[in-house]
Length: 173
Image (cartoon, rainbow, N blue to C red):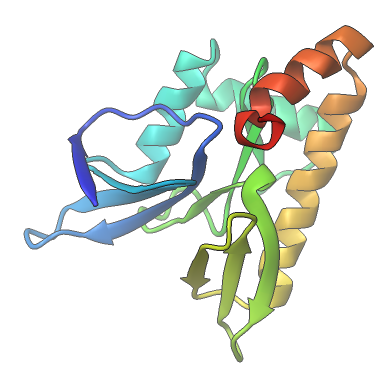
């Protein structure tokens, strides 16, 4: 695990933002990327907000856009960057500092682990246990997928080619 400090921008290799309390009781974030795990001295929501800024918008603007386009009013999936098409979604209220955020395009499947628990299997074979039932997680994945497809369907064919090339660089190689 590598410690990166305070700054991080979500990118195509980002799979999950998982908060934890450090020894001083401060919220840090473990960032699961496709090839490594990083630690950031920041809350997941702040990382999401900073990533929205880096993508040319605000978090509030992204949430408002999802609400207007999809009529989702709570725990909305959001697109981080229009060019890369990265869509992330919270597993609970983003206002909860312990909210886990997932990147939609990395999720393979969800395994039931009993009442109130499941494990997310990412496409690269890595697993992330979460304190939410399989049904709850799958509904959130479905909503994020619907939003992602809605955005993708609005692109022209040349934009789709660019999106496919840049949003999944590991899958293209």
